[in-house]
Amino acid sequence: MSSELLGRAAACEAAMAVDIRGVVKRFKGVTAIEHLDAGIWPGQLTGLVGPDGAGKTTLMRIMAALMRPDTGTVSVMGHNVLDATALVHRCIGYMPQRFGLYEDLSVAENLDLYAKLKGIAADKRVDVFDRLYEFTRLQPFASRPAGQLSGGMKQKLGLACALMGSPDVLLLDEPSVGVDPVSRQELWRMVQALASEGMAVVWATAYLDEAERCESVMLLDKGSLLFNGEPQGLTSRLQGRSYRLSHIQGDRRALLSKALGLADVRDGVIQGASVRLVRAADMDVSSMQLLADQSGGQLELVAPRFEDAFIDLLGGGPDGRSAIAERMEDVATQRDVMVECSHLSKRFGDFYATRDVSFSVKTGEVFGLLGPNGAGKSTTFRMLCGLLRPTEGCATVAGFDLVRSTGQAKSQLGYMAQKFSLYGLLSVRQNLDFFSGAYGLRGAHRRQRIEEMIETFQLGDVLNVSPEALPLGYRQRLALACSLMHRPSVLFLDEPTSGVDPVTRREFWMHISGLVQKGVTVMVTTHFMEEAEYCDRIALVQQGQLVRLDTPDALKAMVASDELPEPTMEQAFIRLVEAHRDGVDA
Image (tube, rainbow, N blue to C red):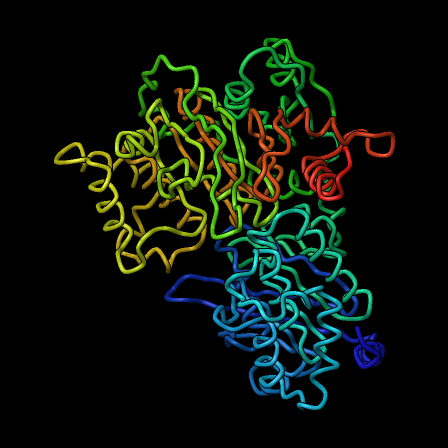
């Protein structure tokens, strides 16, 4: 990014940027980091991955000299984090997991504040800001309050502040959570450019496609380092064990559930109209082939992905059962359509957040609402949940008009909001108790449902803990439990697995698939495109308008070409969004 940075990187080319030796960190008897040895090099992009509670954020905070290890040493650019804290802070940039900027301050005011904190002289700030504005393309938004930025722009501003002072080491704790694929791609390009100029970059992520693109990956689980090296070194271990089951006759969700119950299946996910399976290392393919024959499908070997190897190393994915779905009765309805909106619009002043949107969602369907940050997804969701009154148009849930029969419509739906919607001043049990009452449950019936949720979502050990003190995966489990308390026939999930690890994400989708098989209708928004593959149909919205509506496989086919014969869902999303923005056909 600057000649100063390149000079410093060249000077320490032979030395590690971060040297971690024998680090141990415990909290009240719980081991967060267990005897960790690792090194991070200048000019290298290092991915830090692992399930919730693996120790990623703890390690980040130790490297940033914000937390002291119990034993062991960590040095950053030769400075020990224990006795040279000020020097460590001068040579690092740190972007925490939670948005660490001041939302009431403008973009320019946040940059000025961080410049002062980094000790950048006033007469040099204009040049520094100009470089950061050019790098992040935030100049047109300099006067906008940070709280009014889209998710992608907030992360760009966080990155700009972390880069203040041209650090030698850049620590990014899940910088792409809540960011749409287009903005995520821009962030990725920026960080790659920084690494190519000599900066040591550590990128903690829940998105394994990002980890796969790093030069080196550190995989943690329960504080222990399970793998450290090039991602391809881990992926190659799965050679000959990844399969795709296509041309399925029947319900692919039921087939996946059955497959995950087989002894020779290590992992499985929905991939459009197909199912992707990973075979256990010590088993043959006979049971999988029999399942393929029974479904009229075709089983073929495919190239392994880093995610396959990640799940395998952690012991495999969850089984195909959903305890909550097994306890539910089938949804009793004669309706073919459970959600319908006609010419739905929402205007704030002169700005249309949603404009003339019409679609219908069939009973028992998983319907995805996808789009870039600020496209109008959450606004549409809130109108369909009766939380926001439309400016124009109408919408119904289970046949009830959301304006004229709001109470009846709300009794049929469960809503899991994008931003964590539980009460931080209440414990886990108190949240369960509150939401069960809010949904009209009483007496023994209420107590039974609460106990079911505690058992199903494994909340027994955290009942007296505040939700804000829980790992993200547990918080999302609790939020899903609260939204399902009253057995809704329609479930609205607004980015339900944003930031959670792939294992927890699979658990969520096992529950969702089980609920759908009971007749529950699901609407979901997500920025994780592998998750979008679970949808039956996807509505792509942009600038408040519905621009595409089709199956995941059909959307991918729209952008397929000789250069890209089998596009991923993320590639399809990016190309369709860019094509609409540029006013051309995909």
